[in-house]
Image (cartoon, rainbow, N blue to C red):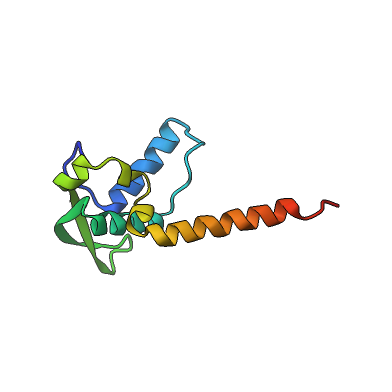
Amino acid sequence: MMKEGEASPYDIYKRIKEIRSKYMVTRWKRYSYQYIINMFYWLRRLGYIKISRTEMARSRSGAKLHRKDFHVLTPKGKAERRGWINPFRSLYPETYKKAREKQKLKRKKSSDSPQR
């Protein structure tokens, strides 16, 4: 996004898939397209990106039109470093904290249970 100026969630999704296959990166988590859409939503809520323009695009079959939003970085997004790592955590710190505590309790219970 920084090089080209603007991008849509689908552009980013394709780019991640391209990098994974080109460099055979297997350690990266496989992100679904829905996850990328959620990420863009969280980044917009944080003010790190904004919609620069909207186009109507056809689906692959060509039968259906849908809205395609292109995003650009905001000055706040260019300056921020920490929030990019986990935008959900930055946006909803209490929810994130509760979820982490719940995971820890679950792990503790499973490690305390006797092994057969």
